[in-house]
Length: 124
Image 1 (cartoon, rainbow, N blue to C red):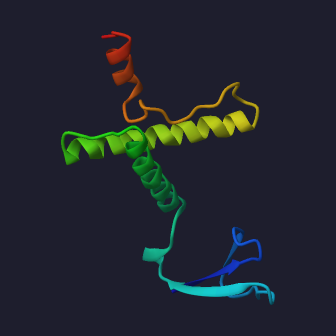
Image 2 (spheres, helix red, strand yellow):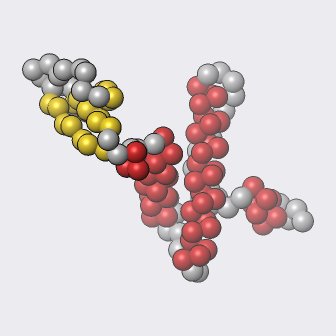
């Protein structure tokens, strides 16, 4: 079983993760020790999935999205997460000066590029 020690610093928003218990907190820090086995160790994908779920909920509310079935909603959720990932990659490249514009979520973020072209540009 692995140990994960989380230190919350004075700033409140800052967090430092240290594997094991080697680092000791200062007097201004609080230590939380969480015992985890390999099956519960958080991954980058878990974090990304959670972020997408939060953004998805906000997206549906902001654009008043309702779907015909749970299957359709699941499909649109996956497309949204894929599009969100592409937006984030593009904007990271923008931040590095590799792109000349930023992308963002809009009312079309739950459809594919192909669907958008067929619907709005009459491209068959």
